[in-house]
Image 1: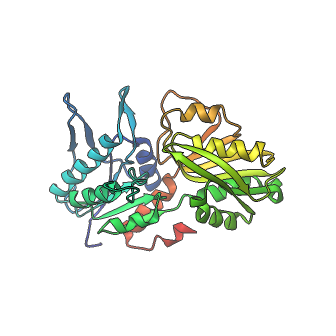
Image 2: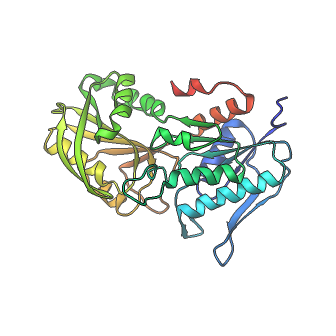
Image 3: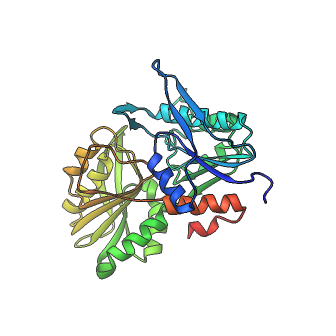
Length: 327
């Protein structure tokens, strides 16, 4: 028996309950009995309907927008749900509380880009810590430095092993004619590690961003002519950058076809429309952010991360190393 908790319990907010259920199924335990919602004036509430005294508790909640009962809720609703759930569990004498945040919102606001800017990612990290979380489990932070914003342990899982397994099988027959492409210079390190695991060459799309959520493709570094191309990114928001990069790879670079993959499918604004009308053959996301309800785009596919998070939760509970999940 470990000192920090006598048993394991998993609770979820409303942003990604299906993933929480999958994780519980992988672990062979029931989802914790709780209710999280909002009052008529918009204030959030959380009620825990079972004892958690001395338990090792995991709260699964992506800080992304979500839809519940036909109503669209913002990132801030998801964040507030997470905070008040942590507070409720802390006041109920939980042994240890781990915030399982598959998608960490506000991660792109990790530095000051002009005078008098906030560093919102640091503020969110402080809020989670002060609410009572003892550790954080997340996946593919937009910037690895965000781990240092927390004063508690952070395990930042990588989605690339899931993609490596998927694409190794999918492109096995045309492995020699397949390339990994980074959609911008900032993603080169991620793309290089991905290319090395798949033993494929790499190219880079060089672009200049004129304003937020828009970009202009300048040129392609590398020869992608007549190649099957895999575009790798950590997240897709409006999809503009990804679609422009794919367009350039086909029309300028002469690529045979383009498949894209990203850990987080935020898909805001005209993202679905942009992907539908693009030259992309397929876009594959992990289900850290749930798919948009009622929207069917045949190009978009999802792969579950439940098994990886279940493994990580099991290792954390048993106090064993999670490093095996990074290979």
